[in-house]
Length: 297
Length: 297
Image (cartoon, rainbow over all chains, first blue to last red; front, side, top):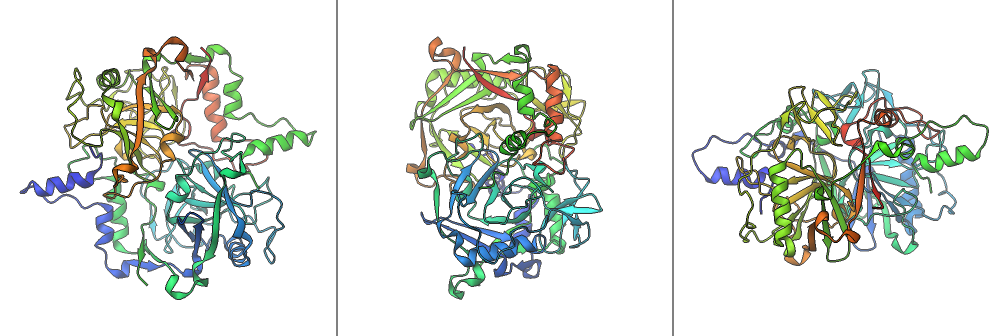
């Protein structure tokens, strides 16, 4: 069973004895970094989706970039508005979407029904800890903010990219920006043409399989589940900070300010070891999302 | 239920009356193209995977680019070697892999056990019908061959890109290139760092959901199914040309030589209509794979 991946290959090479030490991978560099290289994610910025079948997905909310939408999302979660929510759309190589499939519910009380278009901001509004040295198909500049997000832009404006696992706010025609009651995540090749056209509000950092491995829908050319029975029931959507302390999962991100961060980019662009014979010499922004790990709290 | 996609939006805009005609989408341009813009895919180049549960995936084999591996694949299919094959690995945002999970089977009779490294070739070996005008993160030049494949390269060498749905040959350490007995397809953001390191032999053109929507595995950090009972049984893998005529599915590709083709690229880079407010002005190669459609035969 050929494994296609360097993991076993490195293992085999290591066991084969007096070979030079293989070049460390990005994952190995991150794992060896000091504790100070990792930052704890605020429990106010962690959104849980607990599915009726027991699966759980965890979303890191981009509260610094889309504060009005994230405020709505916290309000919606706390109101119980999502208690009968479902996944109602799964379009292959595009998005999984959840919320109110009926389109009949009144919006949750207390939300901003017309949040501003939180699609872009000044290039240095959140700082850029590390410039990405590699070319991007969609933006003239890319990089990573000190608070742990990959960003794209042009040196004047900056925005979040629609990478795999990023979470956005479904909307109707502009100037509607969506309330946050219906959300989607990217489950295929990054549809970066959506950048700056929709509010991105987070990133799935755990349990992505619960959203990506769902049966594809067949309705409307949009992956809608045509039979309501296909919809995937959600038991609860909650902000982690609202849970009893003992029930709160915790996650850390690798700080882009940490010296190791730039080394992980290089390690992904030029992979070593006996598996890769031609290094790419480059890496797409969506292939170098900021490393995240679960931690005991 | 905000739909997030321009389809309903265009419909709504059209119904709202005296608006200017919306800019046609790439799909609309392709659908309006004359029959001569479409080329029939050779039934020798179509590989079916029929799953035990009734799902079917169809792979277009890249026989012009990887002839030795594709010859092996045809031989393996005809030998019945895959009659007890399973999907044994599904790694989120990476690959689904199938073949011989036991690692114990002798190779199929009559195959080349050490096929050459069909990883790259001269830039103009297959012609380039259309240069892709947009920037690529991994290659200095990209384009489309007259026989219907997206290609990357540098003007001297050319290779196939690891886009969503592309099919490659699992292998152990180089110089092993794999026989074709174990194959994988990309189910996430394009892992283009695999380009030129593995033989790509095809593209899933129908039934991708049967491969992408499978439960993710948990073994070895590689998405392996740890319990053999999780493996997804395959009933048959066959070359379409070997089926009775009445049972042969047929597919066409939009010829990159057809004048409409370049227009579809532009339409994807600068999407019109009332949904998109900021056109990307660019498109990643993996977001403009050559259009394919099923046809009656």
